[in-house]
Length: 117
Image (cartoon, rainbow, N blue to C red; front, top):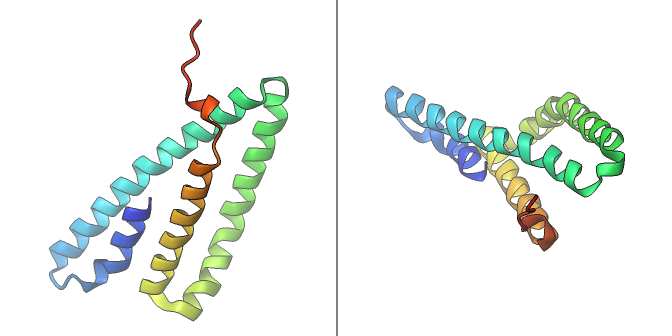
């Protein structure tokens, strides 16, 4: 996700139109793959961690995602007005890296164990 976001930030510096579109397409491909992994992994982790309250917590997760998807464009518009195109993407990449690394560091080791039937 960070790689794709940085690629979006630097893509306007490519002068050839084909290079810009190739960079944008590669960025979207990487971003789509990362998003697909996240959208599968997070609900799975919620189901593993809280099997007794799975339905409630999946609802909280989806509600939080809905709020983020609703307010994200508004927040991005404010950030974009102040930082411009390139710095907005670089700030977003830093945000993803910081919270992604934090999530990885604080993930319990027991979630990385295989569960045998």
